[in-house]
Image (tube, rainbow, N blue to C red; front, side):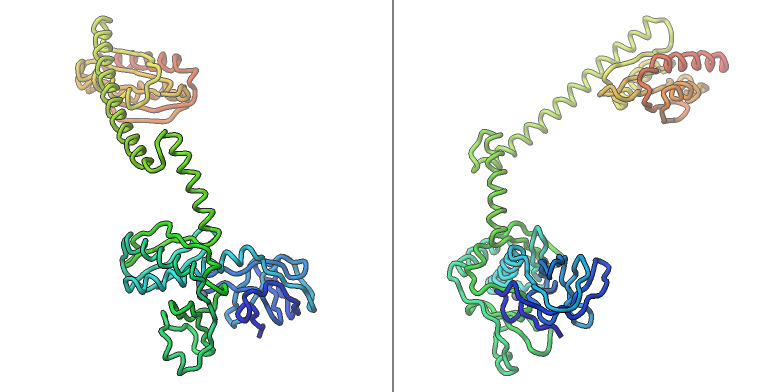
Length: 406
Ligand SMILES: [Zn+2]
């Protein structure tokens, strides 16, 4: 079996190794070494990346028969090689992982919330607690954890015998039976763990909870530590500063400023809806009057800038006032890019199937749509043929009127 240097000395990130085996793998090639500084993914912590010889290590995993497999991008021959772990990625994972020990220990101490899940990715780290916790408890945990970080408590790996193991206040039950490794953080936390940890809590730098939510019967808590926490704060600070400048309000009043903006917007939307509705009412009256003055029981017209819902409101209003009329309305849509067509007839013309009027017109527009005997609507891309389409609808209407002798 491969000697696990990352367990003995997590600070060793480069060493001479012997390549024992290299087999094809779905993601490249799988290398087995005599000893490895690479942490294989497990316990919520992602695997290390780096180099072995001139091959790039994409991931490191543990095989079902407990071999450490280094997944690399090219085949390597057996023999000696240099192995080196990407130090920044490892430092980041170590910071997030050790921060997790600390935060879990603080929350257990504060409110007996046990950590039952841990997940770490490139962008976020989270723990799942077995009970619901509130903002106040989480904020207290952040202060206690950061006190422990500033105190530079020693972090050490213990391999206790059975009797000593029984006497330790372990935070969770070990997953393995033999050679149990316990990570001790000062007198704050004793936790069985096979991950990588710094020598003292000071290396965690700082710890900040970024969000939390109800998850199953408990709470999922996301947090950042170390450089991630600094980058997170810089990013959020930049966003807040920009917001504060845009709103011309101090950062402390940004929330109030946004709330005011949203409330204004909703008021304006309401006013706009009312104004639009009044305008459509006015336009309906004008169309009714146009039909009455024309002496014909029909209206065929292009109305610029209207969308289909406007056309529907107008035609329904006109036909309510003049149930013996036919309305054929078109528009090039609110942005002028799509021909819209609506044909409708009033309730006093039950024998007229308006779809027969609609069909030849929508075909010219190369559009789609349909409806029922009383109203049909649709749209098409051939905006430039709108006038021709209306002529086709008009002539189909004349034909239908002739057929049913209306
Ligand atoms: Zn650990």
